Image (cartoon, helix red, strand yellow):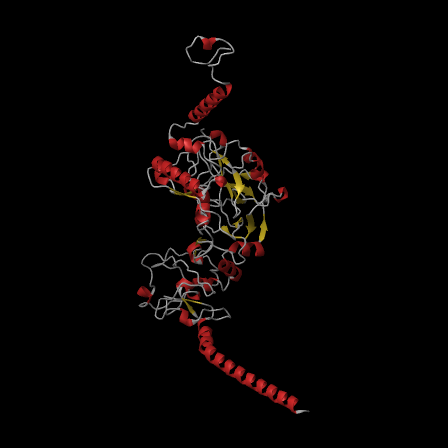
Amino acid sequence: MAHECHCETIDCQTPAGNEQAPSPDRREWVKGMAAVAAGLMAAGCTDQASVDAFLQKHFRELSKSELQEVLERLEKQYSEQYGKDVEVKATPAKEGVNFGYALDISRCIGCRRCVYACVGENNQSRDPQVHWITVLEMDKEHGVSLEHADAYYDGEQVPREGKFYFPVACQQCSNPPCCKVCPVNATYPDQDGIVVIDYDWCIGCRCCMSACPYGARRFNWSDPSIPSDEMNPDTEYLGNRPRPKGVVEKCTFCLQRTRQGLYPKCVEACPVGARKFGNLLDPKSEIRYILENKRVFILKEELKTMPKFYYYYGL
Amino acid sequence: MNASSKKLAVTLAAAVLLSLGVFRFWAFSAEEKEGPEKEASAAEEDGGKKTPAPDSKPPGAQPQSVMEDAEATPVAPPPFSPGIFPCSGCHEDLDPNPTVRTLKRKHTNIVLEHDEKNRWCYDCHTQGNMDKLHLASGKPVDFSESYKLCGQCHGPTLRDWKAGEHGKRTGSWSGAKQYLLCVNCHNPHSPKFQPLKPLPPPVRPKDLRP
């Protein structure tokens, strides 16, 4: 094998026993550094910010000062990209809160107002299109049956004769299969029950997508496109900040809103008031009233995923 | 009976009398305090519902759009057509006509599809005071409290609405919420929720441009 040393002494060209040749340790170190540099180049790291991004730790391992640096870097990046002041927060989960969601399928009319409100609030890509909520149209004849469901219905008016509507998004499981299969722990249930994703730690393997029995996770096949004027600048690190290409995303119960005490955007967008949200640990909350007084069920109960998304019949 | 037990008996008797007296005085003063409040709430509410103390309303203020439950919940303003309220603006000079008929001069857009066989305007609107609604008992009700009128027939719905189950709420899950009145979503004259045009369906995966 050719000698890689660049010194020009004749001696150095001799195969062995030369005192001046670099030691194997040093050679390995140089090679290692070259590999790191090549890796950084391959990852598109051409400036300090992208080197920092490349070397960033998992969200839960960041110290306070490191987190602050990350948030500032992201704010700068997004503000430049979208041409307006973008705020990236990392609000921790509130103590004594476990979020639950209820949806009245006797009232939902399938108008998809929630779908597009969610897209706007959570900075989903417009092209290629990413929707976190899928509204299924089902036959009254068959009842709740995913075999008789159509997500692509259209028409002049809803509800259509003989049909009912069944919106599905992340069910925020208490026993989430997606988090079990993630090989890098990029997705995990937070203290308030919201299953979150560290988009900067996600490697895009999509194991979580195949593990999710509800088809609730979406993959960014290319760089997301969000019109600057429609981009929501009030963002959270684990929530609605613009996602990079090649990571998985999904509903986060609008944590940028709900951790500030507000209702999720879909709740406020629903024209028939079919969507309900609250703290499962608060006995006075409307979600508890529904669980205690209405006919409630969860989707695919037999899988023991224990969703915190409840479907019910209000009528 | 020796002297010490006599003393004890006297002390006990005195203590009992004293406590009775104190109780009577306490009960009397409580009665005195409760008296006017009870009357006021009886006058304001019919049918055993709780009301806030009358002095919780600022004196001389417009009727508050506040539920009568313990926690005050603001309700959206009633959805009047522009320029239509106060009704007395026109109706003051008109003679009330309770005959069931097709309206030809005004309110021609109103189609009554709400137990129309048994009802007409003055079953909810008040003859002689068109700026108010009234309950079956005749008690006047402000437009901003029209849910009381609706709840006379739709009791379980009113119960669920108060609990936050029926209807839309906006604001904060943990704090101040905005309720909508029944009539913000249901046209009181034709309350069935109207169909909507659905927003576009999602792109099929095979058509997604990567």
